[in-house]
Amino acid sequence: MSKKIHGGSVVEMQGDEMTRVIWELIKEKLIFPYVDLDLHSYDLGIEHRDATNDKVTVEAAEAIKKYNVGIKCATITPDEKRVEEFKLKQMWKSPNGTIRNILGGTVFREAIICKNIPRLVSGWVKPIVIGRHAYGDQYRATDFVVPGPGKVEMTYTPTDGGKPVTYLVHNFESCGGVAMGMYNLDQSIKDFAHSSFQMALSKGWPLYMSTKNTILKRYDGRFKDIFQDIYDR
Picture 1: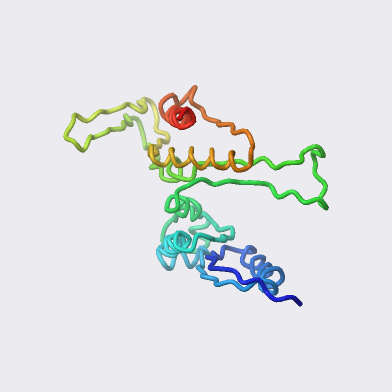
Picture 2: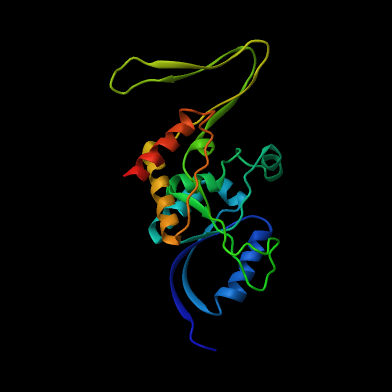
C-alpha cells in the first residue's frame, strides 16, 4: 500500500442515531487507511448537548473557526416529543443554526456528479450550486404563541437617544395566534453578497438571486439593494 496522505487538522462533530454509526464506518473504511488526520472531536449527540447545556455546540463552532475545516453529522433538533423522549432540560435550538450564526458566511450546496451513477436528467452535466445566507433570520428569531386578543408591536429604540419608533405587527381581535420577529445585519448581507459573487466568478457561472422583495419590500428589499450596490461597484 502506498504511503498515507498527511492531512491537517479537522473538527469532527458526531451526530445522533445512525449517523454516528455511518460516520465511524466512513472513517474506518475510507479515510483512516489512506489519510492521517489530526481530528478534534465533539459529541453533538442530543444527550451530550443536554448534559453540557449546549456548550459543546458553541465549542465545536469555535474550533471550526480555529482550524477552518469541520465535518458534521446529522443531529436531532428536539421538539416536544423529543424533549420528553430524552428527558431534556429544555428544547435546545438547532445545532446547525448555532454553528452557522457563529461562523457567519454562506452555506453552499453543490451536487456531486459521478460518471458511474446515472442521472435522472441525462443532459444535466454541471451541478447547480445553491447558496443560502447562514446568519440570522429564522435561526435567530423570537417567536411566541399569542394567548388571546391583543396587539403585537415591534419597537426600535435608537442608542443615540432618539425617539423610539413602534410598528404594529397585528391586532389580534377575536382570538390568539402566533407571532415572530427576526432580523439581519447589513454587514452579514454584504458578506453573503461577496461570497456569492466570488463563487460565481470562480466557477465562471451566472448568478441568480431569489428574494421575496415584492412582498417583504424592506426586509428582502434590503438584500436586493445591497447585492445591487456591490454588483454596480
